[in-house]
Image 1 (cartoon, rainbow, N blue to C red):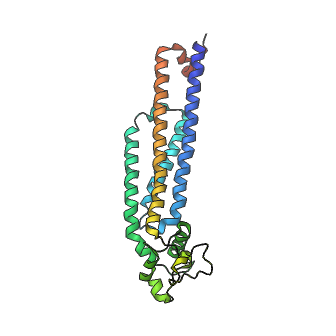
Image 2 (cartoon, rainbow, N blue to C red):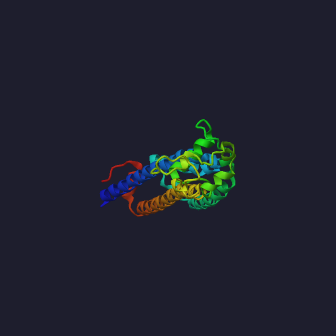
Image 3 (cartoon, one colour):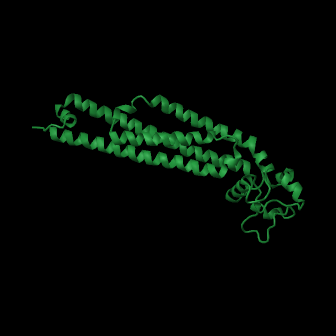
Length: 239
């Protein structure tokens, strides 16, 4: 029975460390995904605060890897309060996303000049093509932009054209060729989806922590009742 107890304890600790390593990889992937996606939408923000959750989630992933590497199960026992605050922080970020987009999207559209060398122009064209949208609320919003007034051809950017619209020039005289939905709501929706990935990663972290605490408690209780477990720590031989 003693040898069986030692083997079971070793299995629990090895399994727990593997879970920490897997969680570290998942969290780092989520953080990297936020960084990559942010690069496509960063012109819709005046600040880079939306990168804070990504930084935090990557840091947590690195911490989990270290915990798994050294097998220090006891280090996670006091982190539940911090995890709760982290999830609340992410929820506030989701609310702030909509406010920030509403505040800055008009400014970004006014900076559009239709050239690929201009970063805001590239961002708008990319978003309109990827999200299948045109303008802020709809394509008519382009009438209020500086680019529309300067071009004087009664048309919107080609990125507003539907893929199946043949010979589309962006002309407002052919509204059926244009995406009818505005980009503001879709950008907010997309960014909220990204932040939900971060929150789900945090919840996964919470579940792993609970499992870690449970395993640590089981092992510690067994250590107190079974002298054979001491050999797992000291490296002795069970007789």
